[in-house]
Length: 115
Length: 111
Image 1 (cartoon, rainbow over the protein chains, first blue to last red):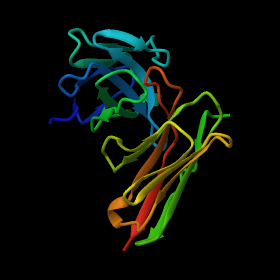
Image 2: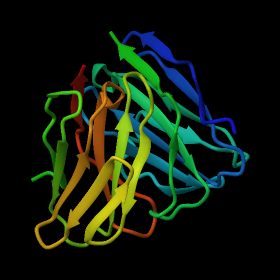
Image 3: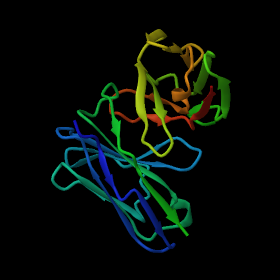
């Protein structure tokens, strides 16, 4: 079974530029998550989708971050404009359902460096 | 006070040692307790999951939850160099899968 696919693996941009990350979840997984993991910290949930609807985006900095999952399958996360503090690994995860007892499978992440 | 506190380490132990990793949490409403392992430059992978107080064992790994003290532990017996990774505790309030992760403890097991 293929895992969660993310691209690109690495990205370096200058502050105030824009960047987009792509995620393809495990086939059949209705729930998709984007996490931000700053160096030395645990992952922090940015947004959770159930199919193509948003379940939780309370920690998404909506003035600069946006995410979509138009057809309920793959998803993109965009940052515009980027700030230095956005340097982090952006992890995508997916699960069969939204419940806390449903295992979430993580991709390898996209490492973003903002200079 | 952070919702989930975890000692970041690093923790260095010899092969074969028993390792104890711990987290504390602040909200007694949390119901789900998980341990994830994260190898360098990889995403986290689920190791252990429990939703009740007590112990749960899986091979060399034992997860322990003490809800009265708001304290969770992961024990690794007969540690191996392949166990070298960052271990993240993750705690959830139930309902939607909104896990709150600890900062992670970096473990190095040397031969």
